[in-house]
Amino acid sequence: MPTFEYQALDASGVRQTGTLAGASEQAVLYELESRRLIPVAVVERAGRVRRGRIPTRWLATSYAQLADLLGAGVPLLRALKLLSGKASKPRLAAVFTEIADRVAEGDELAAAMGDRPDAFPRVHVAMVRAGEKGGFLEDVLARLAAFVAGQNELRAKVVGSLIYPGVLVTFGVVILGIVFGFFVPMFKPLFERLERLPLPTRILFAISDAVGAYAPVTLAVLGVLAVVFWRASRRDDVGRALTVARTRAPVVGPLTRSLAAARFCRMLGTLLTNGVPVLASMEIARESAGNVLMEEAVEAAGEAVRAGDPLAGPLAASGLFGEDVVEMIAVAESANSLDQTLITIADTIERRVDRLLGAAVKLIEPLLILAIASVVGFVAVGLILPMVQLSGQL
Image (tube, rainbow, N blue to C red; front, side, top):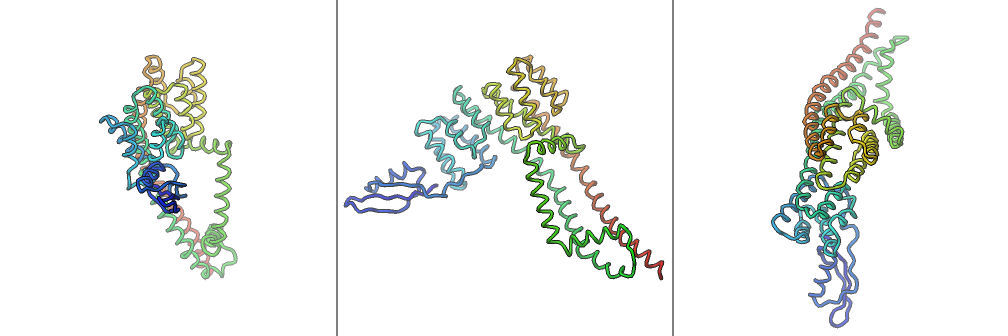
């Protein structure tokens, strides 16, 4: 709950100062009046309300709770005030306190949410606005909770599937760092008698020096290269080239395409189901795509829809959707059931993503082990060759 600093006059006209915690400025004013103080100034203490994105699981739970409260007959303002009382999540409570204050002043819920883009994505605001306009806000909030929970679950599956490969990479880097930083340098004095070391050994010792003796310089160079790469990737042309490469990669490509298609289908289907006009839904889906190729495909599809053409053609041309998915979209457009069909397609693609993730993880594991074994083999070759030369000189 935010804290407010106040200045007030008591009954004798003496100025009083202090702090009070309250859900809003109006609540603090009521509290001062109950103490028979005349408010002069009430200012929220700076830094008490933290701005920033709210975790998606918190939003999903909040939307579901709000839908349940509305379904039970609780007025919207009262329901928002109940959500603003979450002491265990002060950041979420502060956001809903602000939303409740705006609604109490007569603003629409969607307008209040739209003024907090750091907390509520645009797609959420659009769905809530459609629910308010159509008089089915409770249903929209329930669907929005399911939508956010589904997106969060899909993201968690992807991250969870990458944990084990990440552990393997970390373990391999640590082991190879020990090998190059401590083990390989121990052999240098043994080979000082050789006039010319074999090429693999010279490469091996150069890597060893970079990891061990010149580690600060190596880290600085890698840091500079990382910054240069990051700045370059922010450029539109470079970012698009990287996205194209990732989308067409052998193992990562099918997974990237499936994730982008599933996100688009679920987002567009959910927006259409909740009464958002098709062109507005396409624009929101384009801005929330998170993939430059998907953004281009959705933009082309939006232009086609605006011109009266079907949606399926530009989506097929993007290469991000399978032939079966494009055919289902085309049939749904003809049958005027695009909203529900898109959600069904999203469910199908997400099940496919599960299978792709399982196959990718099973393929990544032996590839990582093979890569580590190859490096260890290179180290062995680099150390054995000069030993053979030394044995020939004896």
